Picture (cartoon, helix red, strand yellow):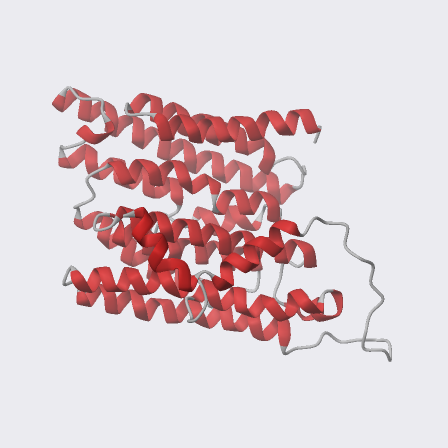
Length: 346
């Protein structure tokens, strides 16, 4: 794609999200979401491959449905209450429709089925944008709404469970990361009504970890579990760090990913939601299984070699790796600083 055209689409992507961040009126927020959607579709379809075109079509249809639900809910609320403000969504019917529309936007269960299929049809860079940046605008709207609603809690618990169960039988890395995204969104939404600052912290750490793992797969040029077995001969250092990043995504101490899960479970326990805390903790074990599976495939298995040598000839990669280095450090070593970060946010 022409760099000037690419920069215009990326500018539109940032503009749409920024408009949604700044808005206090539902129509303006809806316009920001639409600009965001229209800006990313050409980036998804830029390779002109049947899979990417199919993914772009599926994404357009689901996002158009979600946008229609958001517009219908906001106009219904204005008709009933006479208010267009994001904080003024008080009637239960438009509130529930709005929650379902935003849940469809970010891929929460049971409205998640489009996300693994769409992510599988994209390249890793666009998949990274889909897993991180595209969730910011809908989450900012959810943070401004009154989420004291059993529908949202139910969808959050389902997301943590589906995110764990769905990734168990997958062999494609992008689908596994899609289910990982669904599970992490469930954790964030679960604690949103009790501690929005903790949700923001969890989102920031999730973005660091996802950036790290997508960059790692991009440097290795791997998109399936079988291809991970060749990683050690391409880049031994990255292969040694990869299991730590994956286990951080799974939430094992003493890595960064343990902090948000620990604080979310602590907050749920303080709110006397012990059953929900137990279910979400058990669902984290499901996710941990497929992270361990990826770690095993990457570090403890060897691909069949037809040559008698163990080391393959390899050229130095020309891809930029600075962002991989920074995101890896943040994904592994932030746990001691988390109490200070929570104190700063609060």
